[in-house]
Length: 223
Ligand code: CA
Image (cartoon, rainbow, N blue to C red; front, side):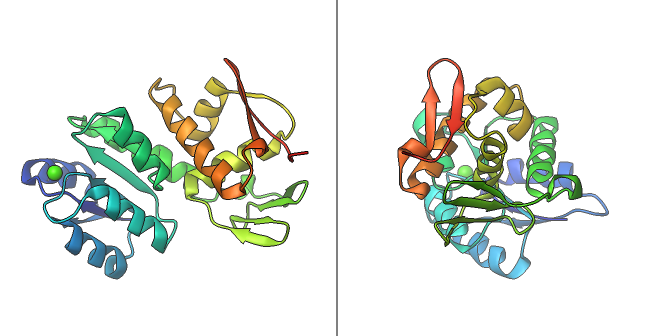
């Protein structure tokens, strides 16, 4: 596995590299946004860890640019604990968010959970799900709406597939967080909202995913 770490703080970087490097995992470290974006192209990482406070460019811009290039999972590491930053990062396509200081075990757990979600498991690759004009193909990880392909981040895709598996039913927040995010971390609830917002925007009609107050979400074709 290849992990790209974009982080200017040498002590944070050293800790992360130390914790994550194993015989089967290579960590490439970039100290600024420019080097990081170049490495994302040449190194072809399986996962990107991205600091938001970089010396040359705003990490949020880097996040947007990385997401524009492809579906590589992104975890944002940030000293900025603000809600707004977290939501913006997730809307720009980050898959998860860790606030500094974080423990290496927590980082490792989040990486494992994210890779579990985004690596196609053979058992979960049955046929195409269709909800009205929306078709979701888990094997190709491809979504079309009325025949037109739409692009989703790995986490958005997993959430959409999860909702589509029980289309028309209201799925409870804690169940979604447990099954899609593999977490019971309460803060992830905001992550869920940000991903729902992004999916609605891509589907072009907010009625695709209805919020049921205090309960959860339901996917269905808009009338
Ligand atoms: Ca920084």
